[in-house]
Length: 337
Image (cartoon, rainbow, N blue to C red; front, side, top):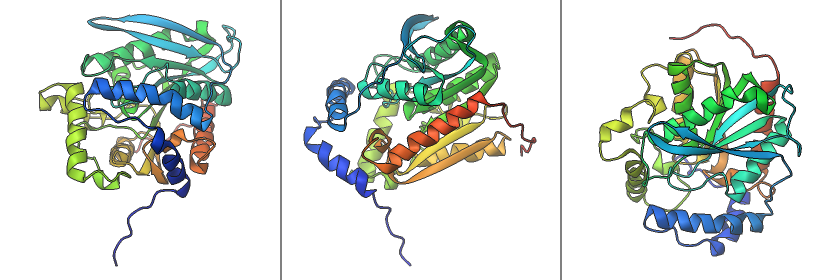
């Protein structure tokens, strides 16, 4: 019996039809794509009624030895900064954008950080890293590591609890969050409670890429070529770099000792194989891991809150997961294979 091709959620289709006439051309270079995407961000958010909620914020720029400085923004769950002894959980999060675009100033990302801080009752530290191809690996993982170290070191003065840390990221930011978790295990082994990875890229070799899942009509061969180009401008010309653990966390020789993970994938996303393979590999290494595939959704449809029921449910699901940081963690038996 022939297998039916997965269909896009009708609510997602409706939003994409609405946004299509407003979208600029993608652009042939990273700089063009970045410029056009940045111009589309306020257009899209205005069209969908996405606006930042009130939240106290604070910005810092921190040095990264041997690499460009890293910028970060702290979000508190209320319009007032938390007291130093508040003991709130701290989520360090990295935005997505194919390593070449987006940032903490984008309306959509800024609005998301504010809402998650408020709804989960946590502090969010949103880290910014340099764009490729102007800056290449390993600068980005080192910048994210520096942001995480800053957040852990300053947790108490922010009103946070250094024993209730979490790492998160979406898409390319999920790659950097997972790499930061590995760096923490290898360098400091701070007590990170949770990894939250949304539609993450975790193997830059492309071995787990599933172009047939992609919701667009782009031919598979063309999609693979485009994906390889994005990765090459991030990693550089040596293909062996893609096998390094901090470039491809899924390829780390061992995943033992990493924080528990909750991973979200989308049915109509070429990256779904990365997240799902990572969840299996973590579980085999004895790391508690949960992976949820959202049916009928595309790589970016979680953006469409207020218009797509699945996007609203995903937000509530994520908030529920983040609120567990207020609780004492469950201790599971060692089942590593």
